[in-house]
Image 1 (spheres, rainbow, N blue to C red):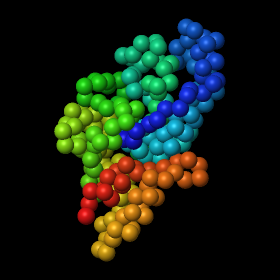
Image 2: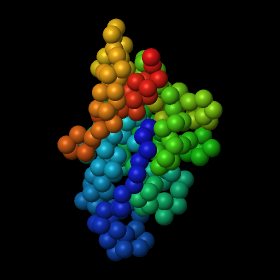
Image 3: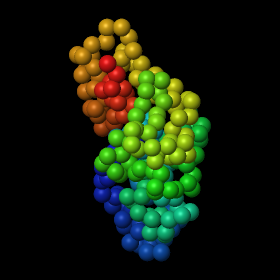
Length: 206
């Protein structure tokens, strides 16, 4: 997970809500929904809000952090309750928003809008994710969001391996160079997939 700094909602979405004061999410125009999703992807720097895999308009969906089935009608159209989630690694629907579905327990979760959300998780070079020390309450979240699904673990491990961290002779100069690469956006404003896991391992493996 990576902290998301929300941008203002798209103007077209604001206008739709003004013109549809009793509107519900299911009735949201497709063109408006697409603009909302593009806005979410942009503010998330091209990463899934939960696993930090790479997402695009055709490989993502709008996920409500507080699910529509448990939230109010206001929550359904609250831009701050919306994130762009992947469809699952290789469109498997085995992780993130699709598998999370309607599960919601604030006591066992952390929102990507929490500035300290990244400190709730730790990773190892095999790609596994687990609660950070003292943050055990998010274990259920890891399980219910499928964040240790084996193909997702493998994808994180591959991203970590790409840096050369596991090779003999990997030095501090290389570490700093890769940290810079992982922290910088590309020309399209996107971060590299699984950058949070890679950065954690670069900083915590000698």
